[in-house]
Image (cartoon, rainbow over all chains, first blue to last red; front, side, top):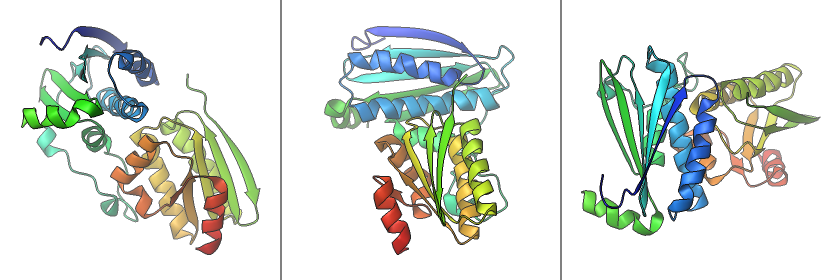
Length: 152
Length: 116
C-alpha cells in the first residue's frame, strides 16, 4: 500500500440479482473522500456494475461470491473485483462494434469490458483457472493528467 | 429487488415512454415489450425519456439495441431524452447514438421527430 492509499475497504457480495446496485452505494460513500465530479462518481458506478455483472454471469465461481477491494487515495479510487471462477483470456475478448451487431442475427451483448475501459482511467485484468482480478483506477480530474503522465 | 416502472403516453404515430428505475435485463425487456406492443398496433416513433433511470447496465442497453433494430426495420424512429452525462457517454461508446438520437427533453425530441 502506498502512502496515498490511506483507506482500504473490503466488501464481499453474493452473486444475486441487483447486488451490483448495493456496491454502487459503497462507491458513493467513498467518493466523498476524493475530489471527484458527480459525473466521475457516476462513471465509476457504471464501470463497477459492468465488472460485477461480468463476474456474476461468466465466472462460474463455486462460492458464488465476489470480493471488492476499494483503495481510497487523495486523488484516486482503485477498485479490485475478485472472483474465484474459471478465469478467461482477456486477449480473446472481441472488441464489440455496433455495426457488427445491428441488423445481423448475432447476440447484441458483450459490451462490459469495453465500457469499463472507457469509463475508467486504468483497467488491468489478471485471470487464470483459479479466478480473475479486475483492477480499475479512476483519478480525480485535477490530478488525472499528471497521474497518467507519471504512469506512462 | 429493484423496482422498475414505465409510463406510456401514446399519441397518434408516436409514443413517449418514461422509465423509472434501473435499466438491467428486466428493465430493458419491459421497455422492449411495451414498444413492440405499440409497434404492432401501428405506432412507429418512440421517445424514450430516461430522466428517472440514471443507472443502466450493458445487458439492458443490449436489449435496447434489439429494440432500435426492430423500430428501424419498421421504418420508425427511436430517440432518447434526459440522459445523464454518463449514460450519454455509455451510448456513444456503444455507438447507439448513430442510430437513435438523443435530445435534452421530450419537446425538442418531438420537434426533431416531426422534422425527420
